[in-house]
Image (tube, rainbow, N blue to C red; front, side, top):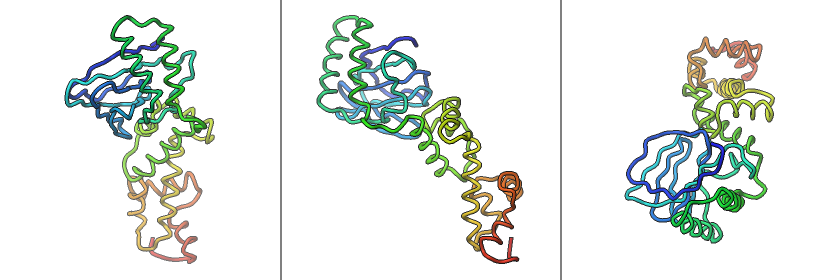
Length: 249
């Protein structure tokens, strides 16, 4: 998509989970729209709008035919790119309500020119983007890390982490490389080993249990990963942590 699209759209019933390669802003005119973004769910209503990142898998539902202003935004454009800056769900104040009312009238009465779409979108994004916001790459990394912490014991694909972070796998890889000098996969491996090492300090847990709880397929997989990444083994780490030369490994 090469230019901003601003339309009045009416939704009714359930829209199946889908994704698109451009970001989208959804603002209420009438009614409410339930949105599931995968990593977060919420409602677009009279006081709340929603931002859907490019590539984010999402679905939504409206109980009746309700109306919304929808902005389909090109990923690259002259105005500031909003990806990762705008919250998934944001409060709508008086100024935003004024912009919504204006656009509802304009879009309903005539075809919108490119210059009007551009100017209106610039004003809107300026008001929904928080001031003093953290770097968007940093926000994505924090979301990725929080997702890994929640799902540590589960099978996790890089695509799952990227979806939770609201970025494509390629962009998430770039964010980790620039901000952490590592990759999402290496970060996942390190977090799992860190968790395993913390649990090894608890003598009540067997190494086999710790392997599963830290997201490794079995004790052998944990041992291989720890030897490769930390030049040690779970048994050696446990002995060092417990301050003894023997013990139940």
